[in-house]
Length: 206
Image (cartoon, rainbow, N blue to C red; front, side, top):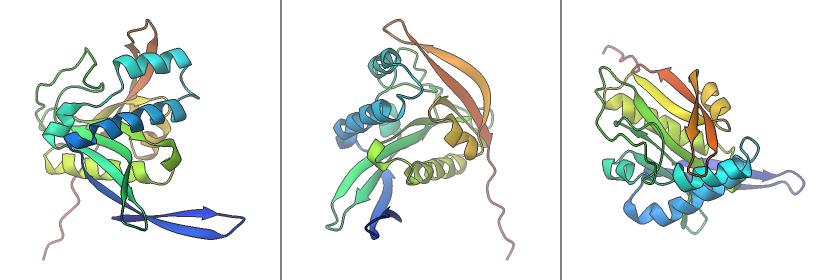
């Protein structure tokens, strides 16, 4: 569990909020849909047109229930002073071929990957705008990378939005290809395919 500090500079009030990361469950899906839509509308408007955002929400962005079933989708909860959790972010990794897209996306490929030959996929990161830029995405990403490493993967790849590419670059991911995702309303969504090689930490000899 991690503490996030919010500060109001003029009043000089500091509030510590606990952030916990856990695996998503099916009961989270209604709240996940809210967070995803709010995140897309609130954080991607500077990089995509209204038509692109609407098209992406209809045909690409959404909950991938296969990730939840696989136990590889994570949620971040903010715990208030009364101990009440609020789901404020989500993201996952995948051992399947699908690079992006929720349940409604037609281009899904759910066959399993071979860790010795393929890259695990970093998938579907969304942070509620009210909780953006507080390190929550970094916490989820670190947990996903560690889990993929434990599963035997040494490469990670993703289809990053234009809004998220700088964040992933700062985390060691390199752009390898610009792609355009066709949307159901005739628009296209530019994304960046990015990759990172990871290695397990060296074990100290006793």
